[in-house]
Structure formats: C-alpha cells, structure tokens
Length: 204
Ligand SMILES: *[C@@H]1O[C@H](CO)[C@@H](O)[C@H](O)[C@H]1NC(C)=O
Ligand SMILES: *[C@@H]1O[C@H](CO)[C@@H](O)[C@H](O)[C@H]1NC(C)=O
Ligand SMILES: *[C@@H]1O[C@H](CO)[C@@H](O)[C@H](O)[C@H]1NC(C)=O
Ligand SMILES: *[C@@H]1O[C@H](CO)[C@@H](O)[C@H](O)[C@H]1NC(C)=O
Ligand SMILES: *[C@@H]1O[C@H](CO)[C@@H](O)[C@H](O)[C@H]1NC(C)=O
Ligand SMILES: *[C@@H]1O[C@H](CO)[C@@H](O)[C@H](O)[C@H]1NC(C)=O
Ligand SMILES: *[C@@H]1O[C@H](CO)[C@@H](O)[C@H](O)[C@H]1NC(C)=O
Image (tube, rainbow, N blue to C red; front, side):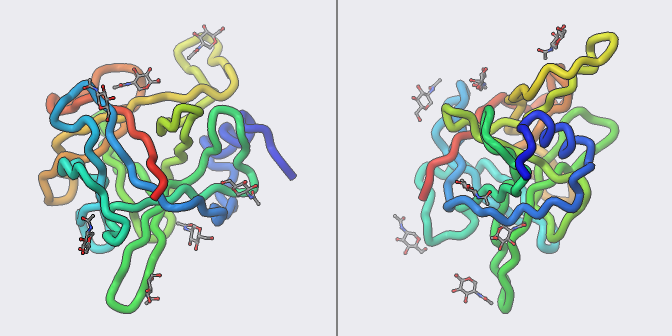
C-alpha cells in the first residue's frame, strides 16, 4: 500500500503511524550548513555528546567532514508509507558506536514548553517526539506539514515544506554548544543567539 505524501505526512504528524517501521535506509551523507553567517556557512554538522547515548547536532565549524569519523555521517530512514512529492519524509539517523554495540538512533525534538526553540537530539529508541525530515529537489533539509492553524477554520493545504532551522547556543542538559535547532511557528526564535540556516546533504 502506498499512501500519498499529504496523507502520510498528516498521519505521521498526528502520530497515527506509530507502528511505521523506518527501515529503508539511504546511503550515508554529511550535513552542510548554508547560511548568510560567514562563521557557519559551508561548515558541517557533527553528532556531539549531550548525555548517555544522546547526541546533538553540533556546529563546531568543521570545514572538512571525514567518512571514517562516524559522528560526521548520517542517513535518512524512510518507511513504506513515505513517498515522493517535495521529498521523501523519514527519520534522520545516526549510528552510535559503543564498545560492544552499534545503535542506529533517530532524531527527536527536545522540547522546552517555555520556548519556541527545540533542540534536535538523537536518542536511543523511540521517544514519541520523532522529527520527520525530507530533502527537497535542491537537497535542502525541510520539515513538512499540511495543516495551517492560522486560518479559521484550519486548512489542509497539501504538503508544504518548512525551513526553520537555526544554529543557536543551547544548554539543554548540561553542555553549552552551538547546535542545530527547529523553531516552532513562523515567529522569530526567542533564544537571542539563534542564526537562521539551511542544511543540505552531501553523500559520502
Ligand atoms: C534504519 O534502517 C536500518 C536498515 O534497515 C536499520 O538497521 C536501523 O535500525 C534503522 N534505524 C532506526 C533508528 O530505525
Ligand atoms: C555560502 O557558501 C556557499 C558554498 O559553500 C556559497 O556558494 C555561498 O555564496 C555562501 N553564502 C554566503 C552568504 O557567503
Ligand atoms: C580522517 O580521519 C582519519 C582517522 O582519524 C585520519 O587518519 C585521516 O587522515 C582523516 N582524513 C582526512 C582527509 O582528514
Ligand atoms: C527505499 O528508498 C529508495 C530511495 O531512497 C527507493 O528507491 C525505494 O523504492 C525504497 N524502497 C521501499 C521498499 O520503499
Ligand atoms: C559496528 O560497525 C562497524 C562498522 O560496520 C563494525 O566494524 C563493528 O564490528 C560493529 N560493532 C559491533 C559491536 O557490531
Ligand atoms: C493555506 O490555505 C489558506 C486558504 O487558502 C491560506 O489562507 C493560507 O495562507 C495557506 N497557508 C499556507 C501556509 O500556505
Ligand atoms: C532556506 O531555503 C529556503 C527554500 O529555498 C529559503 O526560502 C530560505 O530563505 C533559506 N534560508 C536561509 C537561512 O538561507
């Protein structure tokens, strides 16, 4: 069974497809920042330690990613419910290498109810706050939604890609790092350090 992107996105965003298995894994890629900010433009994200088996996406200014360093490489896991449109939506994954285990972890929102800025962390297992991302025809990472609640009544406009990624200095669980974040809604991020950015993938 193939669902339309709109339907799949709607179902995903409402959590109906909690049983969906995101096991169709893409080739590995690097994540590059594209931004007007000269400090970050053209640099690559890397998975960074934020807690036990929890990694953020850090903007440490790496200008040259390295395929032998696993913290530089990521994949997109899609499901049988994912489909084309403005980019196949799925989970961004990172493989944590432990002493005696390898664990593929999905990206999830780290939500603070007091802020519109959500850090994006790789957590072991499923947390219920999975981030479903896609890459558009230009290779830009986006998050899709079909529901616009600013209209009365709320409208289903079909799948729309949003680009609300920011590099912000964050400290969610003990470490102060420049990390990749998502801003909810179309307002300005309330964290004053946030710098708007796009993210593109470069296959290894
Ligand atoms: C991603 O897909 C690969 C290949 O099927 C699988 O081994 C891995 O566990 C998946 N990762 C997640 C987080 O589901
Ligand atoms: C950002 O870097 C890209 C190449 O990596 C370049 O094409 C673009 O002009 C740069 N943007 C700015 C605002 O410097
Ligand atoms: C990539 O990392 C490996 C291991 O640290 C190192 O030996 C190699 O020189 C690096 N390659 C580049 C192009 O930096
Ligand atoms: C898995 O994803 C690839 C593209 O990344 C696609 O060509 C293929 O049809 C997908 N397979 C399934 C079973 O969805
Ligand atoms: C983890 O993956 C690497 C690369 O595929 C492999 O060399 C290593 O043996 C794996 N470790 C475990 C514990 O499976
Ligand atoms: C969705 O459609 C409504 C009704 O046509 C329109 O007012 C609104 O601007 C659209 N929202 C977006 C995000 O395009
Ligand atoms: C990111 O890309 C989108 C779509 O092309 C564009 O509208 C937006 O201005 C870009 N944002 C930045 C920070 O470059």
